[in-house]
Length: 379
Image (spheres, helix red, strand yellow):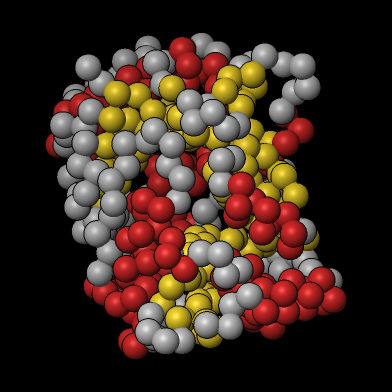
C-alpha cells in the first residue's frame, strides 16, 4: 500500500508541528505475518491496543497484530488506507479510510483516534478533515463510522441522543458522541454488545437445544471449521449476501454485497492468515437440501479467553422454526470442545433486532455496552 500517498489530498501537516503520513503496509510473505513491519504500523497497533485497554480494560475487542496486518493489506473487495500523525518522533493520532470496491461505491468507512494526552485541542477535527478529504477525492459521498460506549459509561440521568432508527440511545456527553455530532454525523443506529459467560450450564443448553429441535423437524444440522465444504459453499455464499441486507441496517447507505464462492474462499483464506479459527453451525432444509441458516464463532490464540459471535442469519422464508437457537446452541457445544479455555463470548446486535436479542438473552447473554453507527452525507 505504498501507493496511498497518491490517492488522497496533499499530506502537508495541518496541525502545527504535526507530520501526517500514509502508513506503508508490508506485503504478504510466505509465512502468515510476512516481513518488514514498519515503525509507523507498529505505532498504530500500539495506539489501538492502548485505546482498547483504556476503554475496556482488555484486548478482547482489539484486532491482534496478525488480524490488523491482514486487514490493512486490503483485498479485491475493499481498499483500506491508514495514516499516522506524529509530533516529532511521538505518535499522536491516526485516521483511516475504508473504500469498498465492488458495491457500496458511494460509501467510505472513517475512523479517527487521538492519543489521550493530545485530546480536546482540535486534533481530532483536523484528522477527520484529512480523512474526509481522502474519501471525497475518491468520489465517496456517504461517510460512516462507529464507536462503542461501555455499559458503565451509559450515565443514568444524562441527556441521551436517540438513533434515527428509533431504537437505542447514546449519552450526549460521551466525548465520541459529542465529537460525531459536532462534525455533522447523524446517529443512524445503536447496536448492543452483549457478553455470555462460559461455560453455559449443560442443563440450560440441553433444554434450549431440545426445545429448538422440537420445532425444527424439517431441518438438519451441519457444521464445519474454517473451510466450508464444497457441497455447501454456493448456498453459504448466498446466505452471506443476504446477511448484508437482511440484518437491520436502519438508514445506513449499505447495498447488498455480491457474495459468490470465490469471495467465501478469499474470506476463509484471510481468516487463516489472520490466525483466526472459525466454527460454523448451519441448518439444512431436509426436503430441498438447501442451506437456510448459519451462525459463526471465532477464536484467536492471542486472546484465548474470548470468543466472538459473528454473523447469525436465518433465511426469511424459513423463520419461525427456532433455527437461530438451534444453530447457536449447537455452535456453543462445538466451541466448548474446540476451545475449552474460552471464558466468554462477545456479540453485537442492532437494538431493533429484538428477536435475535431474545435468543441471546435466553442463552445467558447480558448487556456489555453500546455501539453507535454514524453517517454523514456530503453535499
